[in-house]
Image (tube, rainbow, N blue to C red; front, side, top):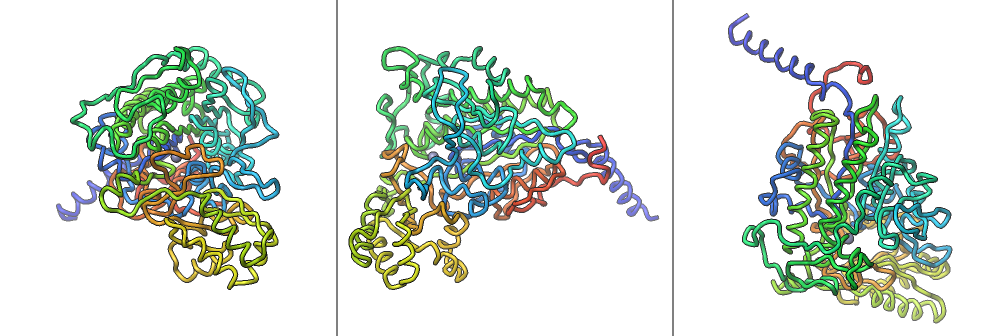
Length: 560
Ligand SMILES: [Zn+2]
């Protein structure tokens, strides 16, 4: 053996020893942590990352960062994104096509997680309404970890929003917790438990949201460390706040009323609260410290509420991230102490991005605007009456999904010239970029039309529209039907880059750090985590992100 060869052999042996000695790469993770930041655009990492020193910095520096990750579909909204992350499937498969859609039987808009058969179980004041996972058509990663592992995973998720906590968890869980303004605190659903979960009840009692009453949200960093202007053109804060810092968390009459709760959830204080609840759940259930692999999912909602009102370049968005950097840093430090560094794996991502505020884009000469869903619906209605006769059509709509009477839908399917007339009328509405009869999506997609491909990935027959309408770039729908934020400064929900591009960072057990530039999608997250945990997903459409996997020793994966 030559000296050079010997050095190579010795070096290789050392590498093998290192791999074998490193428990992280030989065993499944003890805890899977999925962190979703609502409305976090992919470019926030490069644009604002120098403002971070805590958990976001640690994930970006020491994780496997997929810098070109993007959702490939049209329906880039919250419930859809969370279902995609948790199942590894696209909406055409998991069935969650929006935050809400028009139910064809009742003709009414139904929320993605609304379930009238269920009850709210409150940790604060009593509240109405039932929420659950029944409209989700596939199992989640967490469901599979409960089902397939010899010792079922404990599953805990939390968010401000019911739909995000529910979609991250799936069909059964140990604790699924969200925040309700009506209840004035944390709640869960009879879908998951028949009584308050003791550790959540203890947390809620020891940490009432009203403890933040009277606090003032100010910038963490000096203003000169932040980019862009504080009061940007077109910002639309809630009536009790101005476009500039500071933002007080006050009630109308000095109490913790609905105005205070709305201000609180639209501030980084709510993210901080979720971070503390996450830490409390790790301690209470000893997550990641048992014989199996557990699951912790946290969806941080404040950035979405802040982003809708102040826009993606605002000081408010930047400060929300600066504070989230600390919140996530505290959570990771706690996991290091309890579960052990290298024993847990984190998947960090977002459910969608956001468009620039139209007034700011227009100021730079870009054709941008808000597209009134009612105008699109009226144009469709008028055109349908012209070609099919009056009384033929009552058009219902949810943003760009138009739902027709069954007879009208059938006539358009059989009469392509009539369909063309209706589509032409819809496309004449300023801000409309494209429109399809739903059945045409298949042929247009097969012919390579990128808009049709994106729409088809989020098309689920019976839930999506009979007509699908897409805005032009830098335009977005404002509604009309049941929109929670008809007047917001900006939003998301299109197939354009600013809505589709999100961060994906994998970190910890079994992960090889680095920047990876292959275009991937958040549907790849669940398959990758499933692979690391040794379970199978029945319906996944995403792929394992193999380039980010650390080599692992070929031992009995469950022999620990
Ligand atoms: Zn949103």
